[in-house]
Image 1 (spheres, helix red, strand yellow):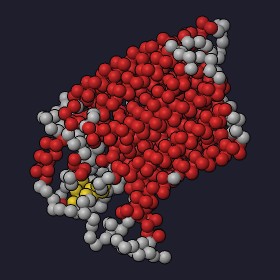
Image 2 (cartoon, helix red, strand yellow):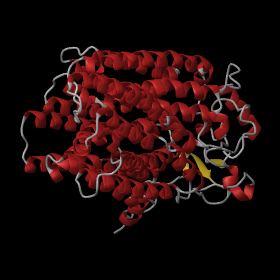
Image 3 (spheres, helix red, strand yellow):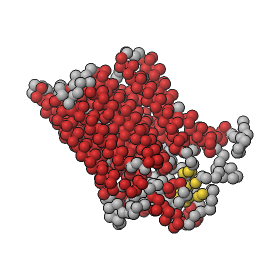
Image 4 (cartoon, helix red, strand yellow):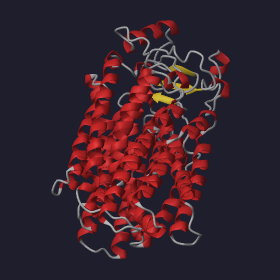
Length: 601
């Protein structure tokens, strides 16, 4: 059946369905689902007690395992490089296989279905399984940022917020499917993310960018749905910790959660309805800029080719150090070596290593922290869930608020990072001194700050170093997490916990348990100091980029200026004739790099 539209071509349900499935907004919805299933590493504290108990590990060994989890989850150089030379579906499919292989072996080990593995082998299993998260981030999140370059802060905040919620989502799912069996949670983590990645592998791809005024406002609809999901999860968690739910009641709450996760498809349909028929309409809509991506240099015949998702390996810029010490102006496309050797990247990397390393140590040890301070098991589960919810809140707030105040007040994102690091120091102090009932507040602060750092970090990288090699640079920024985790979690928190536990337990005790404020006091005083140093270091980046953030950093995506965001691109303005390239480049440098911003080294 075909319906007539008053302002365009005839409306066909089948044609509209295909338009939706091929559109940018459905691609964004698919990215949401992939990211919502990619946060299995954030609920390590729930099943870590099974690993510790069933395999007979002490706290330092468990923290070593946690380090390799963080190493796998955040070292994504390989998926980044793969994504530079292949379409996103390759990255997603490879990640799905790694996720299944790694977590399935962990499940078989802790349930006794295989011989007890060596510690190094368990570290390898969890590193491989967790590394699939880097593949999901690279395939889905990086592609979404390139498809919505003017709203990158909002896109990063939304997608990262669903990763933050995934811990609470997994908790509901496994209780509905397996009951109170935390071992089976590992099995759920093994199969679910891979299934979702494979289903949407071909949906997630680079799509020609079309600029429209007010597009960022459309993301608020996704935000409202995610807030509803977060509020429902928080209410469900609080009630479940006060009342013993039956299996049927868990099934009801889980069904509501699934419906809320899939509710954004309604927003997708509404947004795609606005553009349905415009591409095939006789007269294109005014004030629209279409940016078509191609993989060849900008000769006229090359620019007329269809959009592609790959580029020649010779253009990667990662195989040579030529010009590495002479980078372009901020906001232009850096080569990989130019970015890695820049002072801006080094400062940003050091600041986030201190900040993310400290908050991640608190997240991974929240179960043991609550136990050492004498909190009941239900309260400890509440802390873990609160971290997940406020992790979500931090990612969304930092993404949306930073985008708003940057656009309206030219408030630099690096300064927001400084404020986040200072706030996290408060949470670390509450843990260090064991303030009465302070762990509730600490879990909120730590969860919020841990989540808030990620969108800011990735947005800063995309803004300063460009989008051309964002797949690789994005994953390089993530390396700060395992480095900080190893230093602060394994070498400091884990070692000091075991030292204190040995004082409290008879010699030869296998299950070392520490009770009292002193278990984590010294380690979190050190973490507080390190985080404060990170905040001071971040002020260096604030000072260096002050002129850059005073300009219009997204001008080239609005004005039809030929840019090289991912590959060679051609800007086609449907409202006016093309403006000479050199004139536009002059305008861009005056607007974006004003006040002689220049070289950043």
